[in-house]
Length: 177
Image 1 (tube, one colour):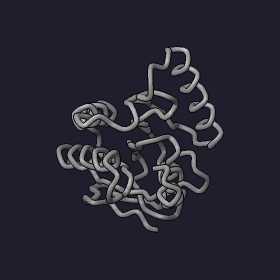
Image 2 (cartoon, rainbow, N blue to C red):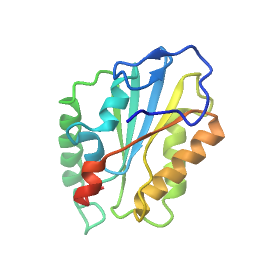
Image 3 (cartoon, rainbow, N blue to C red):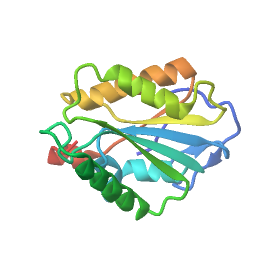
């Protein structure tokens, strides 16, 4: 797979560490993912993509650790966040910042505005040149990915930044998007 920006790049480009796409040397990735599994799955496209950027931020939208399925207490959510951060640290990606939105799984019908607001905050309201938005490839019949994609497309269009798509076929095949 080759990731291709859906918008033009204005700076000179260099081949990223992944060898799969080109990014400006001062580029910054802002990625959105429905679940942390898309990041943590062995051989993840998302890991390869963010690994090619000098700086990356990842927004994990939904919590699978009971959030949205009953009433987890704050200790459970804190513990889940600590476990996720430890798992991400083991990926060995320097300059990767993880953010959890903590929406319930499945996402509420009105999640789009929260997703756009969270992405906008990470991108910055006047982004510097070289900011890319990374989002999962659309998957038919997956309302969470549809919401994430609507938000990423909207933010990329409003801010005029390139949008890269990543795939996670292992999770889709396993039914664990």
